[in-house]
Amino acid sequence: MKTKPFSELRNEMTPERRAKNKTRAQLMLLHLALLEVQQSLEIVQDDLEKDLGAE
Image 1 (spheres, rainbow, N blue to C red):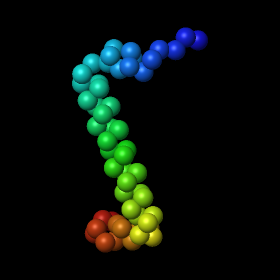
Image 2 (cartoon, one colour; image 1 turned 90 degrees about the horizontal axis):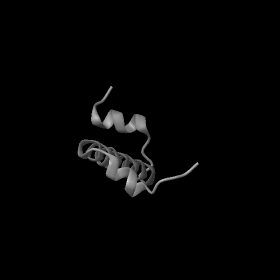
Image 3 (cartoon, rainbow, N blue to C red; image 1 turned 135 degrees about the horizontal axis):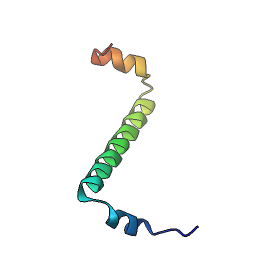
């Protein structure tokens, strides 16, 4: 199976698709950062939801 460089695959994507992928990647990075903060502060999800008033 022949593989293609990622840059070549990206160039074949529409600008809209590239923008959507970029946004999804940024959201994932923000989620990971939030998880790291929660872990460092020893906050569990239930406590965070209570503090934010989410049910």
